[in-house]
Image (cartoon, rainbow, N blue to C red; front, side, top):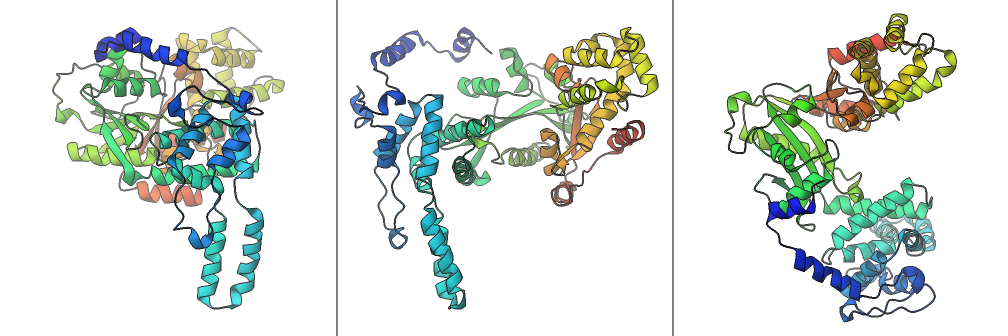
Length: 509
């Protein structure tokens, strides 16, 4: 990423003295870890950090208030703000292992009162023959009893300055713990679900602000946009200047509770036709004072969508961002008729390597390539009888792209295999590829596969350089989305279906 010196020059910041003072503050503080605090009382040295920090058990009992009685749920005063601050401060002082222990205790000991829930559930059954008002009141009591104690705490934390960002980061920790299987506690999964529900409410589309990022945007925002770019890494300031300049648009969702922090970022290229090569988009350059010619803008190409906050995983921001950007661009360029992505295909090479490995015992990967294609590969690689192993190694290293002869030999096979991977490989009936699943849920059509569309090392290693356009026909997105979500039907063009048909005819997988 960019050097600190370049960033300082771009932003006009003189931060040497400030940085020295900042480091001095940290060096003057005595640091305790939670491990030190488990069996002894620990004290902070700063008077503005509140009362002494206690053991892990004590901090939880102190800060996680009991659920108010049903009758007084709307009348109970909130706990002091210092409780939320103390909880946040303590959690941030923990190392990775201690956070796991802390979250396990929080989720297990301060969740739902299962005994109370069981008793109320039995009461709901008992009262079914009574009058409706009684039944509804008992059901409401049961509903209230299903509220975990920590949910109340999260609500209070969200009202503290920096609290929402803290909870987003907290959920990121929970997601990492669950994904790594460091803990398989059902209580922790329930806590994750509670956090997701709260964050989905707080980050609903009506509370988000669409911001266009330009070269005149604050340098801190430009820096974050560059750092968060996950699809096509930003190399330098010239690179980011190109991506926010003429014939380009960069949009981000922001939230009032996290000022200056982009939540999800969408890069758009304004072109004459639907792009088939991402290097063309990334390398084309117009100076900042170039006047855009509206007559040359017939298509909007979404070429990068990056979520910046792991803690907002599964909180649907991308769908709403694309829809809002489409409306914004229609307002600016009413004549634009084509909206499409130019998307990477992460996982294709890994899937293909898996097929090659699973078929090693059969000698030449029966079903992957035709006999004629295998002969061409053997001739191009000079590995008669061992083309499958050679191909597997070449795909792993990416060296095959250096040979025009080998690339021509592989193109038909890789294109139909990629089409099948996108269209035919499923998880629970939906597209296995996460990018495909996202656009298909939005109602896009799987429109065109593009050969050698991303020849960067990342593009070659992840998808053999192939990219795909998901076309948004605005009159059809609603119907397509419903069909995909309800019946798992994929809208696809003749090109994609033709490649899928070739795969089905030539493959025995």
